[in-house]
Image 1 (tube, rainbow, N blue to C red):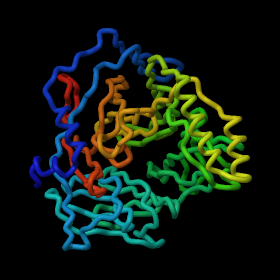
Image 2 (cartoon, one colour):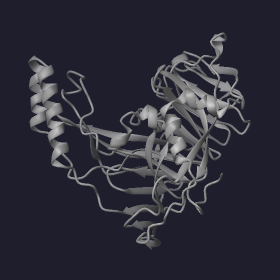
Image 3 (cartoon, rainbow, N blue to C red):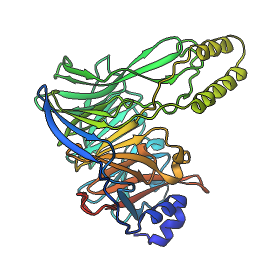
Length: 418
């Protein structure tokens, strides 16, 4: 195991922030915080009013291990590593995207073996787009082949989950009685904009739809040119929330539109059983933010010529703005039932590789606890057994550093396992 002092030099600014967060400072509870649970039309409502329960940070992170990259052992080297996770066997399973495989390291960070590889056959991949670990089974989605491979931790293929035609890019999970759960998004284009709704579908063994549910459709992206014609797209309104979802075999299905502070909670039968409501005032979009977006858009117009410029001008002149900022862009349910939500429009995390991702944290009971920071980009973190597995980037070397952090509660009485 690497020493903490050596690891701090490796991960740079990220660890510097974590040290600042590690002080044993009492976190006050807001006196005007209220939380209540009641039944409305047969659905449980978990409602947090006014403020979050605690001020940040809720958790601190102690780096305990960095996976070893040995330049003399080419097989151990990772290329574009993504999300990774830990198994009950104590090993770490890394989505090695550039090498189209899963690399396995022991609990000392030493490379053991790998499985997978580039291809279209069983157990091989084109683009490893997502990884989840449930009950000792890896779920690996291939973004190119549009399928999910279920594998044992030794690399044995259990089965390959195919997709219905209408749910391209879905994450897939096996339910009981031959059913599959597909977490996906429904998209809708017009000439200038891109609308999206978070959705899930439950299908039977013949791929017939049993249950379909979705959030309200929200504007998430603006195009400077029609994607069907030119294909030139770019993010513009960065404070817009993004539909997000996640699934836990223990805790169920969660769905949010990302624009409003509401999460719908469904059971494995697809029935809405709970609605988590954060009754907190929304944040308006300022004139300064609008002016900044128009200035950026005008710059894009100047950079284009001919028909692309005409289309960009048309998009600018028909630009739609929300009145308020969105809330979340991504969601993660950890194995203890805590809900982690990546906050949009976080001005302090422009260098997300260095200082992590600001998150809203909701308890398993549905109470809004407050905000904390994950030590890395949200899409490169997973929380398993009370630890965070995160892929950091060294700002000086531009190298990925897969690192394991121990979560510690910064709040006395906060029931999170240490």
